[in-house]
Image (cartoon, rainbow over all chains, first blue to last red; front, top):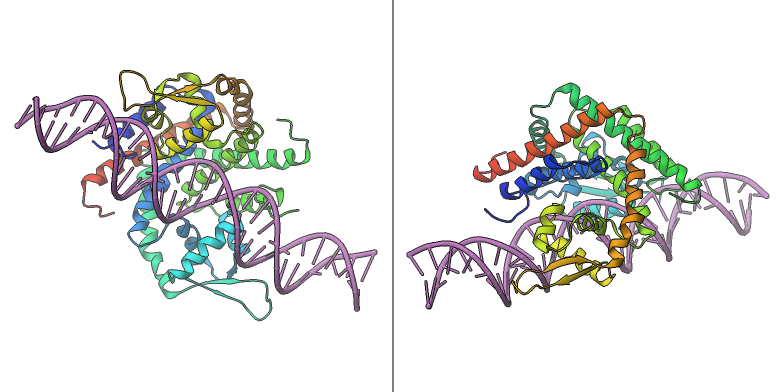
Amino acid sequence: MSNRQGSSGDNQVLLRRWRDAVPNDRLAHLIKDATRGLSRAMQTRLARYNVSFGHWVFLRILWEKDGLTQRELSEEAGLMEPTTFSALTTMEKLGYIERRKLPHSRKNVYVFLTNEGRALKEKLVPFAEYINQIAVANVTPAEVATTRKVLLAIIENLAREESEAAGRSEEV
Amino acid sequence: MSNRQGSSGDNQVLLRRWRDAVPNDRLAHLIKDATRGLSRAMQTRLARYNVSFGHWVFLRILWEKDGLTQRELSEEAGLMEPTTFSALTTMEKLGYIERRKLPHSRKNVYVFLTNEGRALKEKLVPFAEYINQIAVANVTPAEVATTRKVLLAIIENLAREESEAAGRSEEV
DNA sequence: TGTAATTGATTAGGCATCTAAGAATTTACA
DNA sequence: TGTAAATTCTTAGATGCCTAATCAATTACA
C-alpha cells in the first residue's frame, strides 16, 4: 500500500482520527476535510478534460450566463479579482473563453464562452452529479437538509461577526 | 464599502447567492464556503501572533504530543509530506519547533516544541474556541451532531469510492 | 466643470497545498 | 548476507487562493 493521501492506507488513519476523538472544537477540521475530499474527487475527473478545479468554478457560472464582467464573475464565484483574473487568463489561453471589451465601456472586460468552453458542460456536469451522489450515499435527505442549514448558518454567523469586528478595535 | 471579500458588502452577495438558488448539487460549494469562512476567521487572529494557518494545524497536534516524526505528523494532519516539510521548516526558523535526529535512526526526523511554541497554546486555543462558538450560534446541538455525522459520512463515502476507483479502470 | 472618490482590471508577491521524482536509510528475504 | 523493496525526508515545480498596490476609466459633487 502506498503512502499517498487518498490511498486506502491513509484513509484508514484519516477516518480513525475522526471516529476516535472528535472534541468539540473540531467541526472546522471536519468541514475542511470534507472540502478536500470533494475537491480531490472532482479534480481527478476534471483533469481528464484538461480542466483544473479553479476553471470548473467559472465554467459553471458561465454555462448559466456568460457576458459577465470579471468583477461580476468574482462575486458570483465568491473569489477575489486577482484569482478570477488569473484563472480567466489561463482559460482564455486554453480556448474555453474569450474576453471582449464592449463599446459602452473602455474599462469593463466581458467574458464569453467559446464553443469549446460551452461543449465541456455535458462532459463535466455528470461528474459533479456522480460525486454528489456518492458523497451523500446512505445519508437521508433530512440530514442533508440539516447540514445545509447548519453550514449556511456558519457562513452567515462568521460573515456577521467579521463585519462587526471590522467596526470594533479587534479585541477577540 | 470596499470591494474586499469579507466586507459586509460582499457578504451580502455571498449570502444572497446561497439563499436564492441552492440546486441539489451545490452542497460541495456550501462546504467549501464554510471552510473558507472558518479559515479566514482563524487566520486573522493567528496573524496577531505571527502564526500562519498552516502552522496552527501542526501546533495543535504537537501540543497534544510532540516528538513525532515528520511522517507521523503528516498523517495526523492529513497532509502530504512536502506540505508538512515546508511548514516545519518555517516553524523551525520562527523558533516554534526543533527538529532532532535520535540515535536509533539516521533517517527519521523528530519534531519537538520549543518553549515558545508550547507557550502559544494558551494564546491561540481561545481563538479557536471563540470562533467555533460564533460559528454555531443559534444552531442546536442536535443539528451540529447531524452535521458532524453527515460530514463524516461524506468523507468516508468519498474515501471508499476513491480506493475502489483505484482498482477499476477509472471510468466515472 | 474640474477635482476627488470609486470602480474594474491588472501586477507583484506570498502561503498552503499538491504531484512527481530523487536521495539516503532501513527492512525484507532469496 | 547482498540485493531489492519500502520508507522517510527532501527538492522541484504547479495550482489555487489571498493581500497590497498600481493604473486607467468612470462617477459624484462642490
